[in-house]
Length: 139
Image (cartoon, rainbow, N blue to C red; front, side):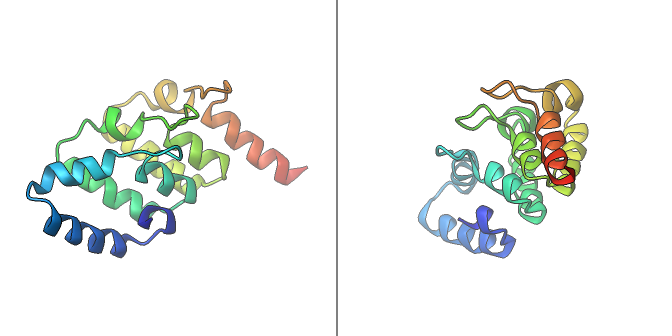
C-alpha cells in the first residue's frame, strides 16, 4: 500500500487508476481514504510509518472533499482504539506527531484532551507511548 511505503507519487498513480474505474471521483476517493482493515486506514499506516508527505496528501484530499477532518481523520481509531497520534508516538515519530498536532489545531480540535490524552483499548495515551518510547532508548 502506498501509505505504508511512504510514496506520495504512488498515491497519485493509484488515484488516477481509481478515477478510470469509478464514475464518481469524489465518492471513490472518499471511500478509499476512509476504508479500514485491522491495521486501520491509509492515514493510520502513514502515521505509524512516519510518512509525513503521504499524510499531507491524504489531509489535502480530505479537505478538498470537505470531509469532517476531526471525525474522519484525526480521531478515527483502528481496531486497537488508537488514533494516528498513538501510532506516531509508539514509534517515536515526533515529526509526524508534531504535524498531526498542527492539523488538529487547524481543524479546531482540542488536541490536548481529544488527541494526546485519548486512551486506546489498553488505556494508553499517545503521550504515554511517546514517553515509553524515549524511556526505553535512554535506559
